[in-house]
Length: 210
Image (cartoon, rainbow, N blue to C red):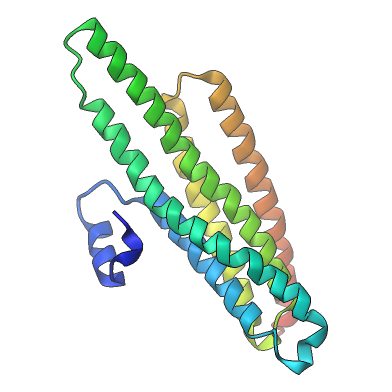
């Protein structure tokens, strides 16, 4: 399902229902998409404004990254639900014979990795987006500073939510090399995310003195 074609109300109704997907992973990706859209907005409110001429090229570069990033988040939103559905389908495979058990086990292993990889990619993209939010806060139109700060907050919340989804799936993965690589990537992305968001927070405290 392409959730981006749903109305906001319809999507929220689906999310609030007893259907297990979409869930936190898809919501994390939506949060990332919202943050990326805010970054693009700050860029659009800066370029072309004479007062910020010296920052035009920097903000144009930010927008050239934030727009493809927004599309990636939307894809991850759908991918997260699809990976969960694949896992559930694998669980429902027959297991009456040894051959069926082997096929089921292989399908579940593949689906578990996918269900981990998608939120991990969301987390890593959130860390990237936090960097763009920081640049938007530094270079962007001061009248839109709160939007750049909001983008950083969304990046942090979405990234941490995605990390929860990585962590809940890791115990079911038997491929230790894959699991350890995922843990390492998760820790690195969370550290990067935290650093950029704290820097943006300090900058916002300086800009918004009230």
